[in-house]
Image 1 (cartoon, one colour):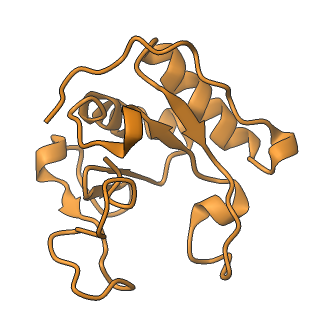
Image 2: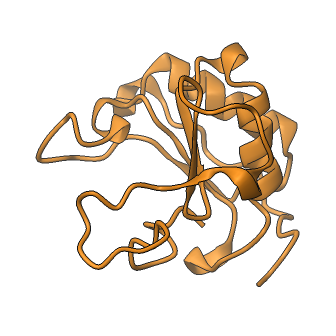
Image 3: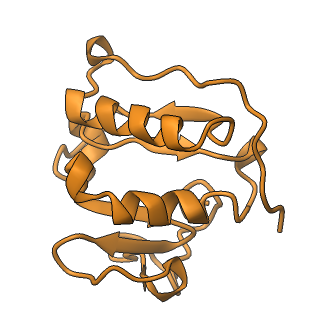
Length: 139
């Protein structure tokens, strides 16, 4: 699995004009500042059939892409743990990385390897948080 990654130019930060909320934009800026050259691109808003199905539907979530072509990499692990450790500073509710999830109201601060597997409730034949591809698995 590729490791460090990085060397990327500063990514475009989503704007409120795109539908992304200020809290998500501010969080994205903080992550980019903390990890220069490690974030390839940032996603925020996307259309959803059910706005309660994802915080991306309402512009309250961001995705930090840290690899080329959605490959599995360890590059996001320190970023995910940093976000967990700074969750209160940036109004973060949860962090997803590498098929795992950490939730501020449910989980203690702990290494990524001890996070719970992400939910499979809407995906058939899903085990250990495997949603079928690297992007859906938050790699």
